[in-house]
Figure: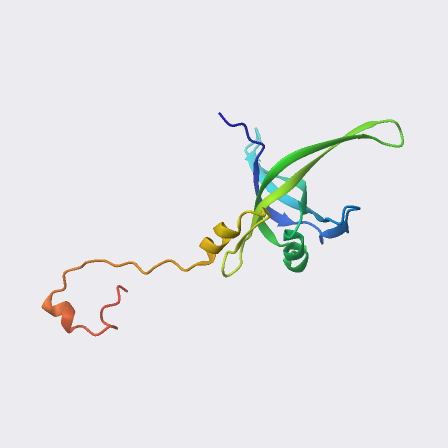
Length: 156
């Protein structure tokens, strides 16, 4: 059995992404993503809770995110959870949780494009960009159907 560290989120970007360049030359983008969860309390009232997630991405995908992601953009994403632990200036141990982006999709767009941060996904992205072949069906046509014009043959 393979053990995975994977998370899938659908939410709205909460702030304009910030881009930094690491000392190694790698670019990193960071932004917050808000997700909502609702439930009913004991009194029967619907309660909505908003969770804020810190999202980070590295590599080529930074250019796409920097160009198209703004506050309020709706995204569906998958990634892995990473915890960081450090000591602050008051000698308190702090822990932060980040989602390291693997793949994302813009929601609400016309084409529903999907983007991947993996370098070896060029074949997969080419396959996704290709148009599907038209379906060929073998239907028997009656004499009446043969006499119909294309406009009369529409199903609606």
